[in-house]
Image 1 (cartoon, one colour):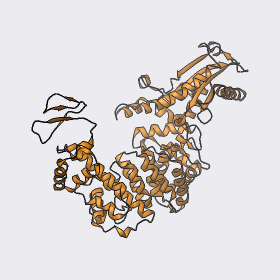
Image 2 (cartoon, helix red, strand yellow):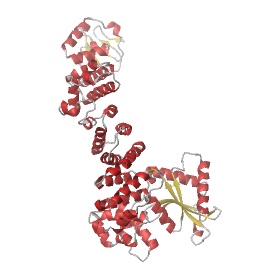
Image 3 (cartoon, helix red, strand yellow):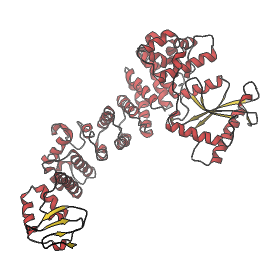
Length: 547
């Protein structure tokens, strides 16, 4: 501290807030570090008196801070007052030990939706643990005020109990996901499904809420009927939340409820479509759904048959005794479809399942059909890749048939996702120990049929590498195509390659390749290099011996 005159004192520090003392000529520059022992004066009493005259909330906030700066006469900024108010409410809520002390917070003039949700969540937890009874607060005006803040509706409709029976989805619209997840356990099954649908409608993939919903729905003792099952599966597919436990529970309940359904094909169709989107191959459930369709042929719709075939093709599953379904599917005509893209999807799915006729395939390659697709706008990339695969199949099995116009396949991007690229990279890195020279090994191969395959090389009968240029016309040399299959290339529940990857395998086989599939369930990129090399050597020997 340096004294420059009898009236001015300078204190070195980082803050430049000027505080005036009783002497008109004295000024002090206050630093972050203050010696509070020397600052007890009459000014403290005057400040406390002033605080008593201010609002109760601000006074309580300043009193709770227990800081020397609370004795300051300077007026705090609005921002700091707001922060102090929020901190005070948080503290009061955390320190509450009973209903009355908690609801005292609701008496404040302004209560945010975040604080309202936190208080209701605590009351819910107390009620669930029998710490308090619902009757202790359900009619309390302060509690009803919290309900109105959360739901923006009359309290009688908002929350007759902690279950928020009428509209919990409104509560979940705010940002307190963890707090809202704690309320899920108090909901009934219909209410939890309503919350799931609300999340889907808002496009909100809240992991804490979805996990809470999945866990509590699975614990329900009531059977989930077909309509509820269809709603749940649709939401899970739309939100990309394939929880395996909940999916298995739903499928088991679907099997149980199917016999009682006599006249509602729409709900059966919805379940089939969602299972396909979720890539969930529950074979017993799928068989039951197809059996139901075949037994109720008189109320079938064209869309039901087409959707069932698309799902079965996605999962590469043909249920036993499903001849009636496929007879109907093969007999369908393009004119019966609402959109041309639906016909393309059906034909592509029949091709995957080895059910397509030459007439089906040729119908999708005609210029007239391409014009119909173009009438709806630019043909999407996935549709163009399907056309390329169909065209490749036709070219390899019936070269004289009609072919796809070249401009449809020009410029179609075929790239890996980031996850798939990482998985393929680990496979190729392993192959360096087996086949290193570029003359023996080609990577990142574009098939020209709408898909990539990861690598190509050639070996003899003893699995010794052979230069690729010598493999074309030598029957004693085997051309190997490598297909890495990551998580997204496989079905769930029963883990097998998706139908489209099986089609790609057959196309490569038609071109003379032996296809080495490397699924993620068998190949772990994190294992030691020697372990990965041994795995590939074993798979390669099995592939050659199978010839």
